[in-house]
Length: 228
Length: 375
Image (cartoon, rainbow over all chains, first blue to last red):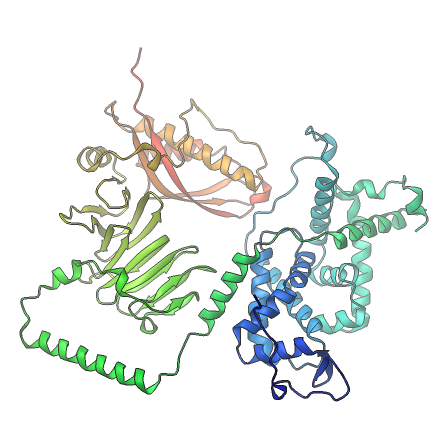
């Protein structure tokens, strides 16, 4: 069953661009025809259209929230909050950038806002109780070990200042350029580069202190890694 | 190769793993459902009324005015108390659904449905006070004066202005009717029972069916009632009253219904815990607390040697910066002797550095078994 169908009436599509088959321009940036129509319908409060938009973009939003936040019980709440914000702010979407860029920025801001609020509340932080070296449990499988490493890495990231943490995640994990990050965090690109430099340096120093990651700094690297 | 380049290489390796990691499975169906429920709540439905509907509304208004006129003209035989006590049928309502966190009672109307799917819902009424439906709860407004709520599931807390008419605020949960007399109280509908906590004032709990026999709960008190309130148990802080209540008011309830969290009595002279508690060990700490409280109560309560009592209370635990239990508040409280005993013996409890400055709220069910005869 189709949840949403693209309207056939051409007058509903804003500013069609002659010659640009399969795309439509919302002011400055060309979007695929279906997406532009979907956004247009969502702006009028069409819930079905918003449902379709949600289904199209939810996986991407989930991935960004997860990368920004790390393993957390708040993941689903934040995904929901992102889409609530999108629904509220879609009417203000000026199409000066691509929708995916705008959505990414909204997602990042929701996570940052959440972290800011969370700082003022006492939290029950789950800390590692045992040194893995002393761990008497049976040897964990690779997936478990990988999850532990990821959780440990986010613990390290949480020890950085919020600004450095944000810049590091957006650049190293999300793959954004310093200029794009500068637009997102409202800071000069040079400042972003400086924060990135210090974030890397601090992380490298902290790595030794984290039991699950300390072995990564050991000398024995396999030959394949040596070639990198 | 320098140390720092090795460390940077280590960072890069983890970053690659993080980039490759997929988020954990997400309950998309539930999330979608909650999201759209919230969006509906943000934009209250305000349908444009067609002329036909407007006409119908006008007719209803005339009918309502006529009924009020008749009532004023000479229907003194209608007893107010009877009206107040009459249960309202939930099948006669069909209203809007509220999911937003703050609602003014002037916006609501009979038949409105409250679904706390995303956050608690607090409804403020200038005359009555405030009531809060906790996350996960569902309630329907059955009547406005007196205010009658049908609690379909979850927990509800009401803070009602003292000095109002009796029964001015009524909560129906299954076939149980909880009526207020100016008070602060909670009603928690559970699958097999209805739990009521009275923080201030008095409430009466009765069955919606015929032959209403009411349980009176005077604060601080708690009670567990069968879904039709035909049987129940009431706990009040004075142990003598517990026994009396247990004798006078307790009808037998199936054992599994009440035994949600019972901890075997242990010979505990002093409770010790690991020095560091993680989140999953907090439960162990609370269990220890229950065991200590149970020991203290059985040492201080003059048991008649026959009855097994259960004391239900709400605990607020504050943990100091050193991880020690700095504050323990029980509502309703224990007897002074038992409280002192608990205070002494919980000194050694340590919630570890991971719980620094934390505050915990837990509902405790403390079982006091009869003393074993001395040999």
